[in-house]
Image 1 (spheres, rainbow, N blue to C red):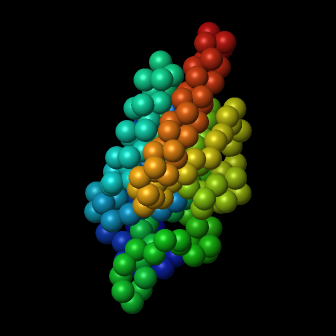
Image 2: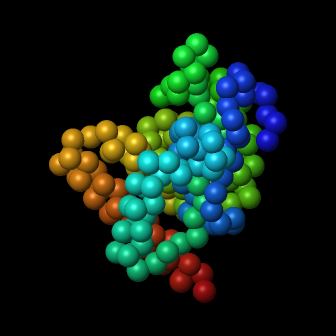
Length: 180
């Protein structure tokens, strides 16, 4: 909670570790905390998090199964510009690398069967940073990106994400049933 491994600690309010059920069947790994997350100290609780939760709810309804889930990010601190103090879209690589041990520790606590890499930055970095054997993994578009799209494009990507999650939840359920 008092990490100072990179310069992001200077402008953060709270370290954002994770939320959800631990251990879990499905771990969502996003990119970085936003403004709401920085204030409350939990990942995926702002507007993008609400959009992701809504998509997960639809996928659960379609799959007929709700796996246990947890949420975290590549980094635990909001990436801000040092001069403007505004959030930047992408943290520096050295900040991501500085947070690797935190992400690995969180993943080991979660013991997930599946990982969902949320957004292109997570898709780029998660495979390099997480030393864990998953049965399943998928990449989804970040809900913040969907929120910035034109209506019809947003509807398409939201439905695509819902189908990806539904299929993943069914695989997790089937793997659980075959283990029983």
